[in-house]
Length: 109
Length: 111
Image 1 (cartoon, rainbow over the protein chains, first blue to last red):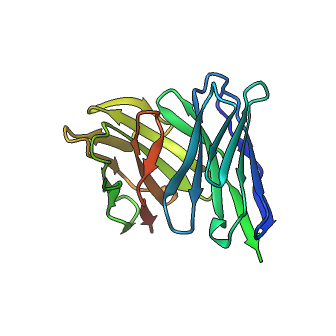
Image 2 (image 1 turned 45 degrees about the vertical axis):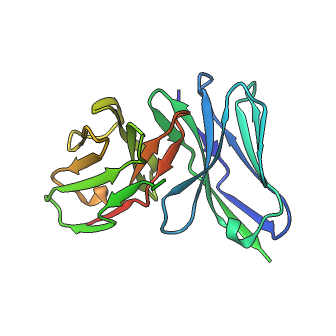
């Protein structure tokens, strides 16, 4: 089956780290992705990870993948006000992406 | 490299009308996907095209259709519009690792 789940809200203080969690169900997914959406905009690809990797780091972003538990996380270091947005995780199934409902991240001063 | 363009950006239609949305992918990309985004249902897959062939279709009624041209540009059409079709329609250009680069979307309002 295809079902991606995320917590809906996260509030974080500016300068702290944010961790957004996601679980997926399709063990055959080859790639997993993180997207960011700001109000009124389309989705911006942040990063993605191949299913045979455990971790990927890209500047302030760190993706961790636990394939056994089908758990994916995105850590944002030194969170800034510009990081306030909705974050979506997605998995590749056949010729499409299946998205979670999105986690709204609010950065407070 | 130019990004994904979608036209029009905003559209207001009345029930029963039809609408055509256009998408130009990133140069060199041969695959295009379409998604519908609504507050209630989130992001739902509509269809995916590769080299003018539809490879996958989501769970939408036949009123939703699409096509892709030889230059990889894609269009989607919605006929007999219903109020529930009001949504943000997103087109994505697909890269080599199936990562998808989204356009800004077309905001469709059906009244």
